[in-house]
Amino acid sequence: MEAGSVPAEAGYNGPAVAGAVLATLFFPLIALIAALLLMGNESNPRKRSQLRTWAWASGGLMVLGVVLFAILASVTL
Image (tube, rainbow, N blue to C red; front, side, top):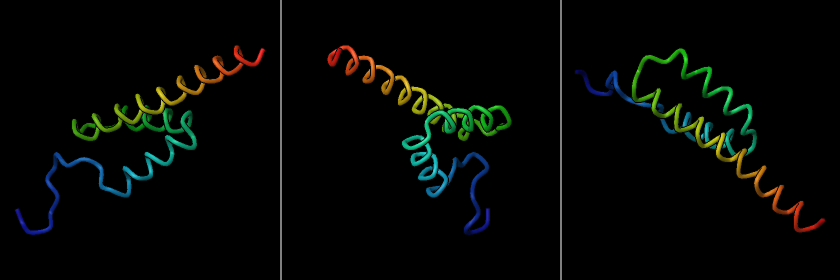
């Protein structure tokens, strides 16, 4: 292997992960859809694992928002 080359089993690099985090925080539904679409076409197991985690985080953030909304709505009514 020559210097500077990336192994075939490497995951996504730092900027891609940072973009995924920002997308999850600001647009969780779009991030969930993007992660699921990308996961369907990915054959690298490391990247599939990262995309699965991204999808779970996006879905979890959406569920947390719904739960917090329900709690706040029940308290204020």
